[in-house]
Image 1 (tube, one colour):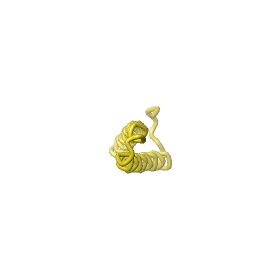
Image 2 (tube, helix red, strand yellow):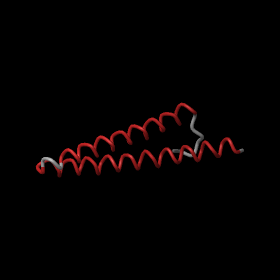
Image 3 (cartoon, helix red, strand yellow):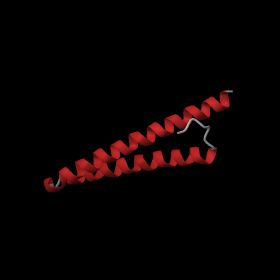
Image 4 (cartoon, one colour):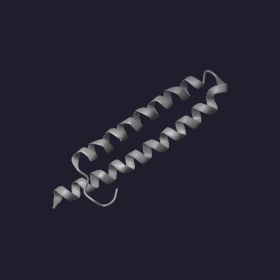
Length: 76
């Protein structure tokens, strides 16, 4: 974010991105669980889970920043 108050559409995009990241993490968790049945796939599933987790954290941080800006705007 640039410090400029985001418009509601942009804020909603951030919310959707955060939700998509949560879905990706859930998919990766399912893949990792399935990979436990095939040890040859466990390493790849672990990498996917780690990457999805990083994306989810990035999206959650962006959403939190957007929410803070939103609250600052409406509190004034």
